Length: 343
Image 1: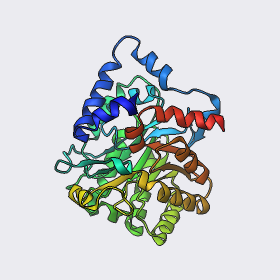
Image 2: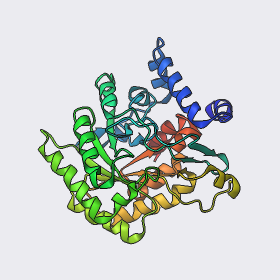
Image 3: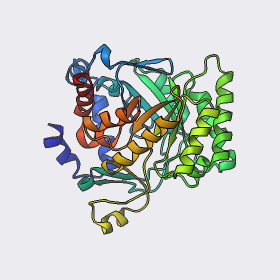
């Protein structure tokens, strides 16, 4: 129904406006009598064989919502009702910020892809904390944290620590995001020495808390092999719980969308089907050289259940959806889980 009726209609309108329209409609509809029960019956797949235990957390299934879809923690309960095993909110910053100028979100239907240059638009971490304190479900929540656009890289650590402290009581794990291409100079924090300093400092703060939370790093798909090996070295030294591979790419290679159309869309990170193979290759490399205690969450181009299985076979412990969720709808979550059970 989604692909045949709803998606063709929604794709006639501006992607960002559609996002707010549909998410608002979802929140409102879930308040209707029997809506939650009906939604759960339609989309949730519950089976002990789907459970995964990582970082001391028990995930009911391995399919999560990637960061960027629910930046402000507005939909945590609703996403759990749709069948996601975990939900990653953010990227959140200390201060609210409007992000980059619009239009900043573009569909490439011929490629089953999206280009975005949102720029960490969010209402600020403190507003998200207030909403998370009121949530009703027990779905696992990850907090994806970043820095404000106006914060120079030399002071970025302060922003990450602020977000960490603010979210500590209301999320189950943390993700340090230094890999978005849409905040100026942010990816420079992926360089070896700045990244090491940042992660060690966040872990130092983590160790001061009553119970340290799992800390993960989200990496870009555009790293060269030397940079990727540096990431592996740093992950071990900083005692990370895991790596999320990967964020969006700045590459535009091999697209079916006419080059002129892509050029007119401008800068931004590309997600969706064109990223699938490369993200899987990165996962395979990470799994080969990381110690087993450092887990991997695979994300990038998961458009079918088979794509998710590919990521898991390459070495991912969990997977996340974003663009596939937009193109395929909530059925994709249950299809992946049913495929895993059938195997």
